[in-house]
Length: 450
Image (tube, rainbow, N blue to C red; front, top):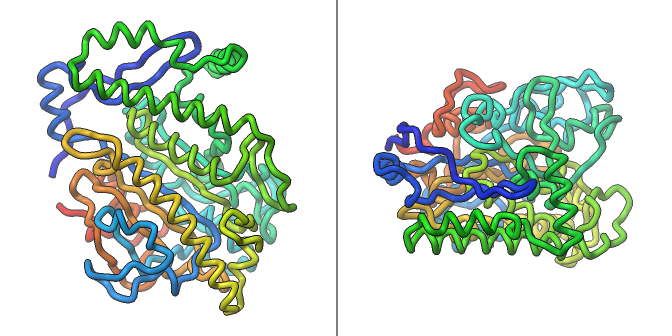
């Protein structure tokens, strides 16, 4: 299947004071030839969602391969999306191993996950790893969208000093690296991420507009209503409905963020990182997923990363009855009670991801949905957290890939196949061709139809 090569005009924006609201594709505004191109294919989006501390693999890995496998307990929340994702077993993050550097598995798991490069062990400023696959893509196709890439996280973390056995904190709280020495620091506050999507590109003006809206209890949509009314006159009935549904979703996200900011954060145990002004971790996580969905819907970016929690996180989950720290539970020493609790956390994270897939699938795009035009990887840089193992990782791929991604199956690859082999195939899918990513030894094209 081939994708759009005919240039399509950039998305329309609604503009107001300090505000620029990107819109989804509206066929009424396209020239006839561009409409035909839009029908022939849609932009492909790629994202990586990272969860920490590995998994209780016995509750993650299906017992059989192929299409008839039975969903495990940890994967049950994805039952409604069974045909929208595939499980991959056997992939390894070799560069997250010790390689003579001793402790620091959590820092290495994060720093090497998208780079395939073993990070230099240092707590100083001489950090070094590799360019991450998302930024390889951003450097080649990022100019096609307003934001070349989007980096999100639920943990701010430290920017300096040692966080894991002599490794700089910067490794542990970042996935995305523009260069060997330059991390792409993720946004941890949903409001700031929202403003990045809908600001006018001038941070000072966007901040002032945000403050003015807050003082006057206004929506950013209040600033673009005049522009929106003019636009509606040019749309057919289908696109008017599409525009109304989209602006309603933007307003609802804005309200949710404003409502969340009214509550002070609860007292959290020592060592737990959480940005200010959000009532719960789950609330923050859901808002970040919604920001990512809107970014893809509006084609504001086609490349995103999201750290659900940083590797080594010892966050408790009292909302699901678990008051033990996540990291502590990952070192279960085969204690069945601890493994059971770890599996509950794994299932909880999967359930939140399932809600994100629900959202993407609810957004129409052409004859299908936004999810049909995404490839989203979910997983961790460790498997068995008790042993800090970077082999046989818990990885799944979701989306349709424009009809090319093979879904609905459990695929077991050759043991110790580099994770970066998968990345080469994912990047090929979006037109980014590279001979090597980190420690890659080839490609994993079996996941995509020709």
